[in-house]
Length: 185
Figure 1 (cartoon, rainbow, N blue to C red):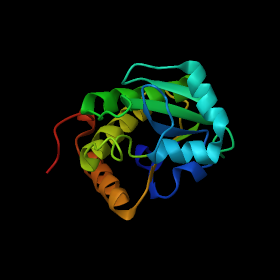
Figure 2: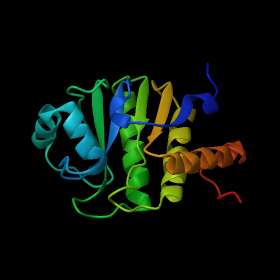
Figure 3: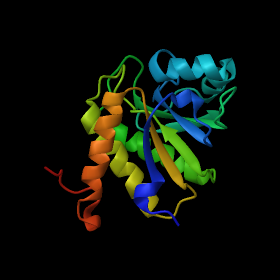
């Protein structure tokens, strides 16, 4: 079996081109696919995804919902609602929506999932804090029983990729008994 370090993959690229079981949408709780990552998913995946979101309706902030992937390579889109429509992401809603997206993937028996930097775009959440929260949740999830074999973080540019890579290296050298422990220097 792969080590934890090998099961979390950080790369620069286009999330909508990922050939994974699921990709994660940085969603609002009304599941309206507007701009940013959601808009790109709508454009590439087709109207089917928005129609499925409309059928689900609003979900609580901090939760996630799943739809098919439409015309995307990914079979599913998991919509992690870290904010209200037009609102901002908080550390708590990012943590909860990331964890919920991972649980949904596990419940569906999915093997691979790809996340963007949820909340760090339109919602204005600080990228470094986003990386820390999402990577810790991914590591925590992979340490338990799960169907997921690989969690990808697909970042839009070199800056974001660098921040996620540095944060992941920092988290890996921390004592393993405290995955959610104090921030390293």
